[in-house]
Each structure stands twice: as structure tokens, then as C-alpha cells.
Image 1 (cartoon, rainbow, N blue to C red):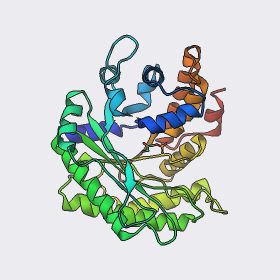
Image 2 (image 1 turned 120 degrees about the vertical axis):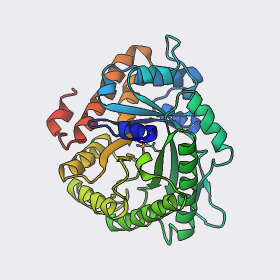
Image 3 (image 1 turned 135 degrees about the horizontal axis):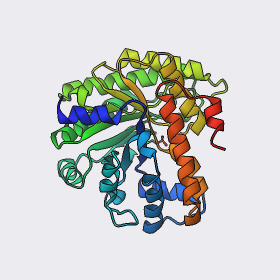
Length: 338
Ligand code: 13P
């Protein structure tokens, strides 16, 4: 097995998943605003430090996605974060895109930027200890959208990013996110996700990306947030599995879902049910941001004396999601945190 394949497989190791802690500066400010904490460099460092030093996290967390600033920061004892994670057997990753911007000529649609200079950034990130990368494309469901133009433009960029990462020794997380926002039903989410993934894999194939060396990070197939009839946990699991079995080649080692605004418990329940229903030819795992961090962020609230409680909350969510990897998450396990 190539080194890149070994890393991709380690990212989706049994019982484990990925912590997305790569919030950009504007996004982490939004998260800190919600707990009344100022987004200073030291506060951001201290918060990430408490997550990364949580005891036993390595039992359930295979990798952490970092933002540029965090990759260059140190733990309280002076150890650079990538070194700290590596010493715990956790792979350091890096967000390399420059964010979703308005797509010219396509009102309401986005394209993710960041390809210019990417080869050099990948080389630097690899030298700083990163072993995998992330690029997020954003697809919006609305009247007459997404357009094929938007899907093709984002798929092309995702494939260019993936090819450049592999050339530079980083495993690319390929993240096409179909947003949950809107009144659409689960069938609409299914058809847009299917169109999106079909185009993404076509572009990856065109650009000679070996699928054994990537990890896919998609949305689940769910009802829109304002849809009046919300699909059940088993319906979401069934629709998501059917959609991915129809679009994602078996060569892909793993699918790590984003949480996308689902509640912590629902994101865990959906993943667990998919694995209970039999999963797929790939590992089915998680790469949650909010669904792993909402509880510890609230418990911490910017106070160092709360660090232990925050770590406990983080470990609980990590453990629950670790159990969801084999369909063994239960209400009793959820309740055991108290
Ligand atoms: P959420 O799980 O909060 O959607 O974040 C995952 C992520 O990394 C989005 O790019």
C-alpha cells in the first residue's frame, strides 16, 4: 500500500473519526460570540489546546483538521500543535481552501477559491507536519439551483485541489457540501446530492486522481431545515446509503460526514443507523465540527477553570460517535454523560 493510501485508511480507522477544528477567523469569531468570548489569538489557542490535550481522545479521533493559524501555534508547554497531535497518534490536517465566494453570473451560487499558489502552500503545510488537507465546496438548494454550471465549476476545482495535494504528499478530503437550508424535502436533497457526487467523481476521474488516496466528506441526505415533514432517522440513513451506493466508487476508503447544522445527537444517531443498516463498501465515519464542539465550547465559555468540564463534554461526544461507527450508539450511552 502506498503511503498516501496508508494515511487515508488511518483517517477512517475502525471506531474513529475526524475532528473538524479548522474554523476560519470569521467563523471561530461567530462561535466565540455565541458564548460571549472575545476572539483573540490567545483565546483561540487556549480553546484548541484544551480540545487537543483531552485524555483518551485518540481512542475515537483519528485526525484533526486545523486552520492555518492553528497549525503554527503551540500547546501551553511549547509543543507545536502538529507535533502534539502526532505524538498522540492523531493525524494533523489542514484546511487549504480560501472560502466560498459568489460565482460570477450565477446569482445565489458559490465557488470555492484557493487554487492559485496551492502547490507551494501544500509543500509548506507538509513541512509543518500536515498529513492531509480539506477543501469545501458549497452547493445551495433553491429555486432553479444548483445549476450544472455551479456543480461543474466546483467539481473541477475539487479535483484540481485533490491532484495537487496528492502530488505534494497530502491526502485530500474532498468536501462537496449540499447545504441543509431551505424548505425542500429529502427527495430534493437526494437528487441534488446525487447530481453533485456524480460530477465530483467524473472530475476526479478526468484529473487522474486515484480514489484509494482520498477521503470523501459529504452531507447526509436529509430534509431541508424548514421542510414541514422531517424524515426520520431510519429514512435519512436509508436514503443516504442508497445515494452513496449509487454514486461513490468502492475504491474510496472512507466517507466522513459533516454535521452541517444537525444537532449533536441527531448527527450521531444518523451515522449509527447507517452503520447498523449495513454501511457500504467504504468505512462510514464522521468529520464533525459543530456536532463535536458545541458541547465543549459551551462548557468552556472562555474560562480556564472550565477546561476539565469542556474536555469531558468533548470526550463524551467523541465516544458516542466512535460507537456510531459500528451502529452501537444508544440513548443509554448518550445519557451516561450526566
Ligand atoms: P460541521 O460538522 O459543523 O458542518 O463542520 C464540518 C466542516 O468541516 C465543514 O467544512
